[in-house]
Every structure is written in structure tokens, then in C-alpha cells.
Image (cartoon, rainbow, N blue to C red; front, side, top):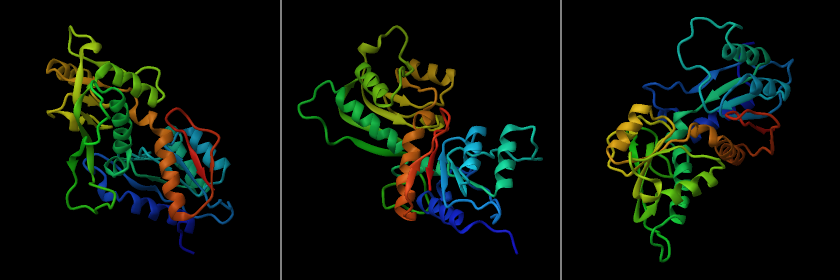
Length: 296
């Protein structure tokens, strides 16, 4: 009999491709899709369940094996660069070999989720918009006419009924927002003790207000934008210095994707349940960047 995916794993893969088409991913650097297609093993009796995680670590691999799931959906690609060999000496390759031995496949959507309406950047935009509303300089009744646009719309790709597909977001507010109050509220909403920022030299955070902010989990799209604030976890020291010297403000959480792990996997949980109709339960393990959720 020819090797093949289990029917449940195939259903999960097809659902992820429908929710986040691989054509939405940034193929200039990214590696998305079904990265490990493990043949179904009847002797292993895998459950019709999927483990959702941000990073496929050794601990998450152990969890997947212990729970006998059929497939792992990991946000970050476990295979990023071309491989010349698969050996047990490399911890990530060891995870792949262990999963393949158990008949567990791995699907990684990464930047297809970033580009998706209601995906990673839109979730951030929701949080940032709410925090900005609470920090308005003048608030007669709040604002309802903020404008949100996509920084880099994708062309000639499958459309989405939920909105424009593309990388990064810009929000423009009709009123000025207190930067210091905004940062405090956003840190609270993101469950962070501290939120790293950068402001122009010689100034204080309390002095600054803003009316526009650019958001991107990856920072490359933020160069040269006509906005007041940059929000990203992937800005180098020199890029941040250039930004503040041009008068911009910077919000740079050290692990944007990590702080979103629970929210993103919870959203996948809801979307997959809606399509597959399976009951769900939280997984018990996971790391700071690998909080995992089980669909069983």
C-alpha cells in the first residue's frame, strides 16, 4: 500500500490552506506549507487531533508524541534553510525524525498568517487601536473614524472575504494620542511587564503624542514610511537609531510573535473547530514561545 497522510491530517492541512493560502506567504525568504508529510501508521493509532504551537521545540514534540496527535501546526517553519542531511545531532532535525517515526506531520503557515485579514498584524492592530483610544489627548466621545490600511498589499493572490490581504498595517487616528499613556496601556493589554521603546534623544516619553503608527511583526516593511510610530520586534539597533533621529517613536517588544502565541493559537483553535467540528481541549505543556493547544 502506498504511503499516505491520515484522512484527519489531510483535512487539517486542507483547512489551513483554505484559511491561510500558501500564496499569501512571502516566498522571497519564507518556507511555509506541509514541511513534514509523515505516512499514516496504523500500528500507532494516532488520535484525530492536532497540536497548535508557535514553535516546534523538543518539548512540544514530546507532547505531540505523548498525546498521539496526528499533526502539529507550528507558526514558525521548522525547516527554514535547505537541508543536506537529517541527523540526531541537530535538535530541530531530531524533532522532525521523532515525529516522522511516530507518523505525525507538521504544517507551518508563518507569513501566510501575517498577511491574512484577522491574522497576526490585524490582531496587533486591534490591541493598538484599543490602547490608543484610552490614551487620546482629547476624547469628547472617542473616535470612530480611525483609518487602517495595509502597508504592502498582495497582488494576484486569492482574495479574502474578511478584507485586504497583505503585509503590515498602518493606523491613522483623527486625534492625537499620548505616547506614554498608550505604551502603559498596551503593555497591560499584552500582559507585559515592560515594553521597550525609543524616543528622540534629549526628549522624554511624556512629551510625545502621535497620530499614526505602522505595525509589522517583521520590520523590513517599516523603512521610509510617513508615520509617527513604528511597532515591530525586528528592528536593528541602527534602524531604531535612524528612526528616532528622524523624529519617529519606536515600540519594540523583544518577541512580538511570542507575546501573541496564546492569542494566535486560540484563534486557530476557533477557526479549525468551525471547519472541522471537533471538540477542543487545552494542552498541558508548552514553552514561552511554544504555548500549545490541542484539538482532539
